Amino acid sequence: MTATDHSLPPGTHTVVLGLGDLNGIMRGKRIPAAQWDRICNSGNALAMSLFTMDMTCDVWDTPVVSFENGFPDCHIFPLHAPVAIPWEPGVALCFARAESMDHEPLTIDPRQALVRQLDRAAAMGIDVSAGTELEFYLLDPQTGLPRDSGNDCYGLDRAAELEPVLGPIREQIGAMGIPIEQSNPEYAAGQVEVNIRHDAALIAADRVVMFRSLVKQLAARHGLRASFMAKPFIEESGNGFHVHYSLWSDGRNICSDKGRLSDAGRHFLAGLQHRMAEMSICGAMTVNGYRRRKPLSFCPTNASWGYDNRTVALRVIEGSESATRIEKRDAGADCNPYLLLASDIAAGLDGIEAAMEPSAMTEGNAYLDTAAPPIPLQLDEAIRQARASDWLATVLGADQYEIWMQQAERELEFFWHQVTPFETGRYLRVF
Image 1 (cartoon, rainbow, N blue to C red):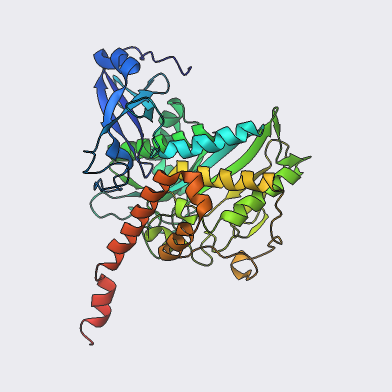
Image 2 (cartoon, rainbow, N blue to C red):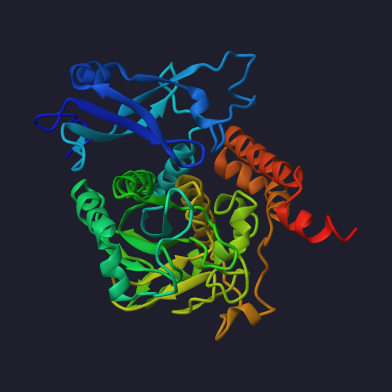
């Protein structure tokens, strides 16, 4: 499959053409096959508010898209040949890129923030590889609760029970060009994890957008609802988005020095650690996203690092030359993969350029490491640190940064403008 090959699979009558919106949710249009050649040549018009509306599709006045300029269009173009969707005969999927009506990159397309950082890496002679791990819940659509019960992490009996949906996720999504390495029951009833094989960082981010959409479609066909919400149940495990980074130059993993973390890898790690607090908003952008960050939760509460330690934020994994890498563990499964990877990579490249050094390594329980740099544990603090960060505004670009921050601020306002069931249940009858 090449970037210029847009040929349809035999028997295709409909093409699903889509891309990630402001929150990394896949949106687009279904197009008759008879219109496909025209779309490939001229693009497909979508309202540019695709990149400014929130996760509930509420549309807002923003600095770029507004009532004043009439909510103009942009165009999307296919990035590859459409791939047949196994569970929809005659329907094929194609991922898209966006551009303005005058054929320029969109300043509010989150994908562009990642493209800029990868161009920067390439100018440094570095190709960034990313492997992604996504956790999600499979729930009853009516009750919103798991149909199974009890924690059976890695349990093969539970895996067999979930195989009617996880099997197609591995096989059918894999057949569509998203290579699934493995799946397993995770740390709560109804929770699973799926690992996508590492690849170039932009491809990895595109695959996350497609994967989340395809998982939801497959789950629905099996009578379940898939949710990547960061913390759907307060007393159960949250859904994480772990990213494994390695850096390649001339075919060699420069994170590795004979299977140990190299100087370049250590500097990249130091950059991640240095910026983790101020870029927290890119991995957790809702009030709910910060409910994951609790002691003993396997979600980090500080910017600690260590070797093969799942209590830290930055887990160094050593081994073979090709396998040595850094795993960043703070993001929620519902975050925008482009903004997460863009800010991570920008921070890591800064670390390499400045030959930064990380703080002392954490040994043992990182939740007890009071010397490790703090990270935001609530949305208001994440907003405060991001608003104070000229660095983050530069990485995301002025327009993208402002739209992203405005959404986070609205989400916080929505949260505070309510009286919760907790408050009425606790206080209504006693005061």
